[in-house]
Length: 107
Image 1 (tube, helix red, strand yellow):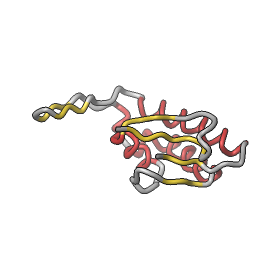
Image 2 (tube, rainbow, N blue to C red):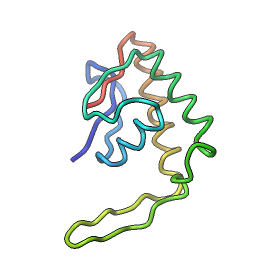
Image 3 (cartoon, rainbow, N blue to C red):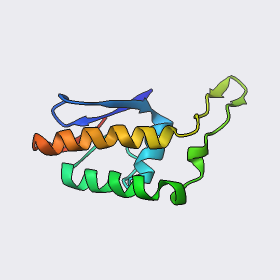
Image 4 (tube, rainbow, N blue to C red):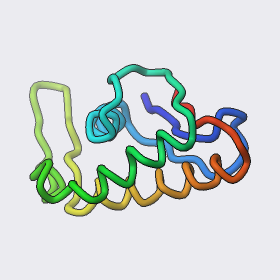
């Protein structure tokens, strides 16, 4: 399963990530870990900029996470720098939404 971040109309740049990675990004943005939501573009962009500025001090997870297996369940892990890359892509989503006067949504 996955979650997509995009301008609320669904046009413009989008970012699709797994539920686990979306939960981590929402946490970094200071937003509730819900499967659906919207935020005004100005506020979302501010959250992204703050998360980018604090990423190295707010979490050590951007060093990557190893693959983990438990029975039939496999967590594929996360490569180093993944969160910074995805925050950069969220920055593109937010700036596009701001220019086009749309809120940012995730679903």
